[in-house]
Length: 168
Image 1 (cartoon, rainbow, N blue to C red):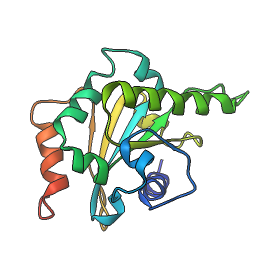
Image 2 (image 1 turned 90 degrees about the horizontal axis):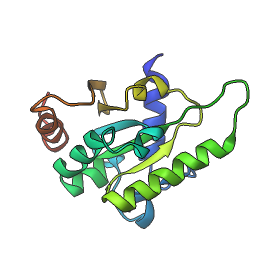
Image 3 (image 1 turned 120 degrees about the vertical axis):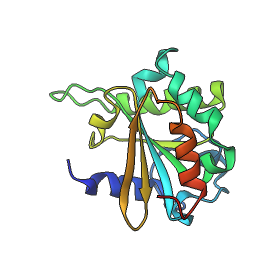
Image 4 (image 1 turned 45 degrees about the vertical axis):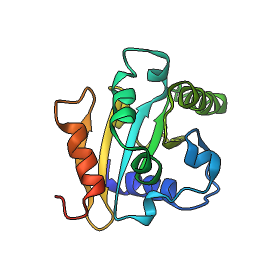
């Protein structure tokens, strides 16, 4: 997979008001928050929608949501939900179910960033193991990538990267 699908998807998620169907998070509901496009750096959180139904599986997502300051989550973080689908028989209801799961999960757990469903399955490999975080710089592309569970210090590195324009 090239970086182009990931960059295009991330750019479409961060563009202010887009016709893309997003789910959950205060930024998606209010429409008033600044988006990640306003800054040069942002994070894309790739998630398996099935992970949302598993308490131990979602621990890394909850840890990330608690550790990162709310203004960073709302302004510089976007999510991409993947879901499993039978390649022979695509079912549009599965994308809708993934969006519904995300919205409910956000409300129940106070998740503060919005997400879109990857109906093209371009980023499925990034969420095969539950959750992957990609750090982007608008000029340089993907700079870092982590897959959950995170080692000590990773969340601090992510926060530092998203708040300090001179980092990395």
